Image 1 (tube, rainbow, N blue to C red):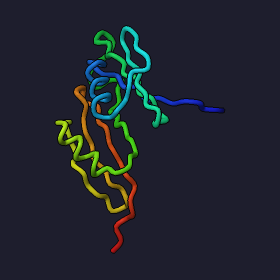
Image 2 (image 1 turned 90 degrees about the vertical axis):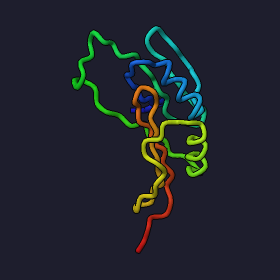
Image 3 (image 1 turned 60 degrees about the horizontal axis):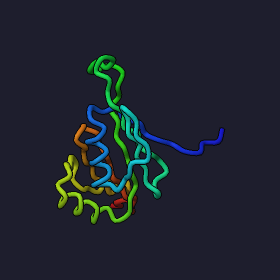
Length: 126
């Protein structure tokens, strides 16, 4: 098997709102759009995002959809955290350091999609 690309597909109520969020706060750009979906990409990310509109006739709350967190590893997370805070992004987990060597934060887009930003750092030793 030879995987040549990858994507995370998120089913949301309003793909355009998520697209604006990922473009304005995280630097993605629209690479393809259709009647009920928008595909986003970045030149420096190996994973594209596909935002698909939820079909209310087929979707039942609590059935068939798993919670998802989109995770991006970044550099200089402290600066990114400050930028996102200034821009008014919805930060659901403030910047924190985990003992195993992860600096992380989490924000949420207008459709409730959780995005975790991570920077790997030295673990806390006692």
